[in-house]
Length: 171
Image (cartoon, rainbow, N blue to C red; front, side, top):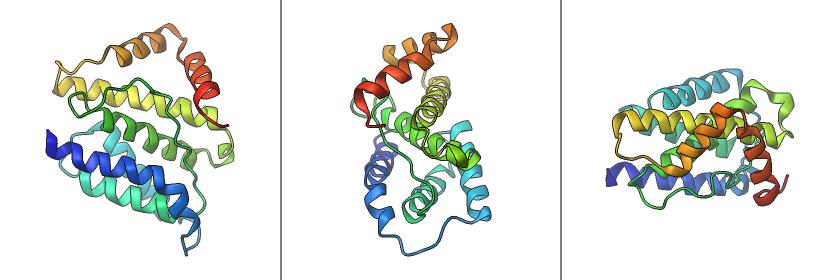
């Protein structure tokens, strides 16, 4: 489990640096083929976050996000009460949030400036990835994420995301 944590943490840290590196990119916008590949890899990660091909695909998506100047993912700590360390796969859930925002932007390019919609998409997928992780490790329950799943089922998750974004993010 520790081995899986190190790449996830490196990817998350790199994502935080993506806006800085992205401005220095010396290339043109993403191509339709790259966006298709990115979506495939992101969807594969969402469906199987513990898959054997996942590390290479994550690395490709991360490198691509850093390099392209036309897709800008705003990282915000919507899921601010995630546990520290790998016991609960927090890095994987956080990565799912950021990658799903990328997928949202690929599928909805006119919503580049709608950070609330991006955050909502990110949290929705992060919760689905958490549920997939629980199937593999049922003992890794996180009360914070369980509460958010209950909010999703009650139809109040969008308000939670809106409130967290207002408190923690510069929109």
